[in-house]
Amino acid sequence: MTAATDRDTAPVADLSGLVKAYDIRGVVPDDWDEATAELFGAAFVRVTGAGAIVTGHDMRPSSPGLAAAFARGATAQGADVTEIGLCSTDQLYFASGSLGLAGAMFTASHNPARYNGIKLCRAGAEPVGQDTGLAAIRALVEEWLDAGRGPEPAAGPRGRTTSRETLADYAAHLRSLVDLGAIRPLKVVVDAGNGMGGHTVPTVLAGLPLTVVPMYFELDGTFPHHEANPLDPANIVDLRARVRAEGADLGLAFDGDADRCFVVDERGEPVSPSAVTALVAARELAEHPGAAVIHNLITSRTVPEVVREAGGIPVRTRVGHSFIKAEMARAGAVFGGEHSAHYYFRDFWNADTGMLAALHVLAALGEQPRPLSELTARYERYAASGEINSTVADQAERIAAVRAAWSGRPGVTLDELDGLTVAGRDWWFNLRPSNTEPLLRLNVEARDRPAMAALRDEVLALVRG
Image 1 (spheres, rainbow, N blue to C red):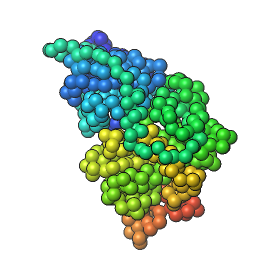
Image 2: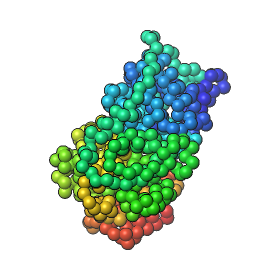
Image 3: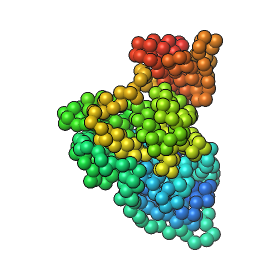
Image 4: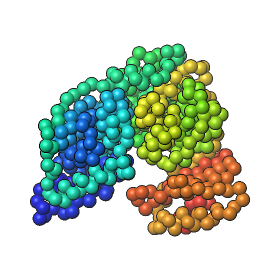
């Protein structure tokens, strides 16, 4: 979308498809372009009152230009901009937290190459979502586009733009949070997916007793080998095979902006993000006894069980990083985890960093002699379906049908914290509507695989019937 220049011919701007619940994301240049990015920079300053901003970007071809345009819009409104250039999203959060600056990260995470976006935060890596400024930013940009003009410059002086290196400081901060001094030598295969893990991993892991086997470390926003979305099993096929071929102790896969990390054990088998959440939670609670740990409602039941066993307080939240981060702050939680491999740390400004979770896994493995599959076995207690999407004509009507089918059954509880969750003694399922598509998302967990499959099929018959 190009900023309008003729009021008589410009359509009324509608950014509803571009501005999501937690970020800005769309196809470049069809949905937005550098002119639009400049307006977002100006609107961000107007809405948040930020006097200083740090910007960073991933390796997508369109990212440097979009970041520079955003900076022009921000400086025209009087804000100073510190550019850190190529970085992972959690490196941007580090800069926001450590420098005390509002932040803008230019990335579309795991989306295909033609997409790009902005993740925004206030100083201290505090997220900006729909209810905390993003809706107001969208409205202001739409107003300017509809009027066919940009905002008036600030009355005072224009802001300054400077550059700063933060990678070494980011790596040092992460390493200060996990004791890796006594780990045994390990061989680890790392698939960066041509994303920002190829930028951060070499510096973060330098000097550790690790033999790192790199896969797809070349920064390439066209993703020539596979999509940088390890949540899709098809995108970790190469990693699983390489771990087995190398006889490695484990494998790590990062998404495009390297804020999520997925783990594969020595057999090449995926370790569920819920198991990683439980493992890291136990480690954090050993250092912070009695603390709260956040988990969203579709992580495994293993997580709250392990948290209680470790003397902590499990706190259940809706799905979505803005809810997790808000609850982290409210509860003073030491750690939080999601089924999607986002991991949040109090010592990282309550922000998510897959790299810090990876360091915890490396430390836990390296501190003892057993293979990773044995180490994580105690955290894999149930059988899960994974997320199953169904296209439906009427989301509310289908959820109501499922609710009616389970209401009143003995020993069954229902809640609507996020969609509909139905739970029994050793099973549960959650059915959530998509906010952007006519889909219902189903997650099922039960004591064993046959019980999970039977429950899954019973629910899907109602959803798709």
